[in-house]
Image 1 (cartoon, one colour):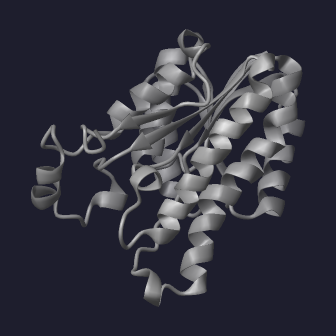
Image 2: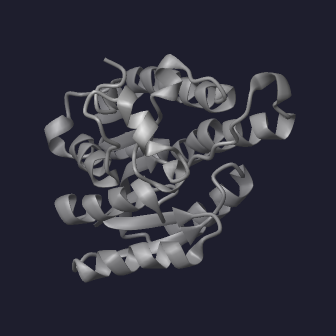
Length: 244
């Protein structure tokens, strides 16, 4: 049986680093989810191949339940000898702005991607994980979901909700050896933070730097491993001490 890990939003940044690390460290065949940037997804796949690892790209919008289910069901039907053991809910978007001027679509699109995306992907696989009595669900959240952040009410609300869902689901599935944890990055070098003023922001960070996607990926790989079998319902901060 081929063991598989699915990473949503796996084509760039933190998602890409997670795909590579899960393949290199744990030997998983990687399902690289992307929504629009096929070229970036193929670059991630190529990097896996360069390391002698395997994967494939899957195009679907996690916010769209019908599309998500159709693509994942088609993959399952074509891969009867494969089993998804690890789900990394990494896909997320930002639509920053002050709440008093925030339009409904900017609120809804962020919630739909992070929170509904978690539901659509995880709920699709959860019965399989419970039947096989093994699974690792890892949700990428944010320091914004823990302490809040002005200008990010929608993003903070979405990530805060996923944190609460993580803690609740962990209690439902723990007896079947399925763990559910969240990883909360602070400022990480990525497309999402590329336009930020690092020189100013790093003054807020005790380590005086932004984190690297690979550092987040190492933590995710640990949580996806057998070594983390007694850790569940946790939110692990990786933020250089900004929330200490």
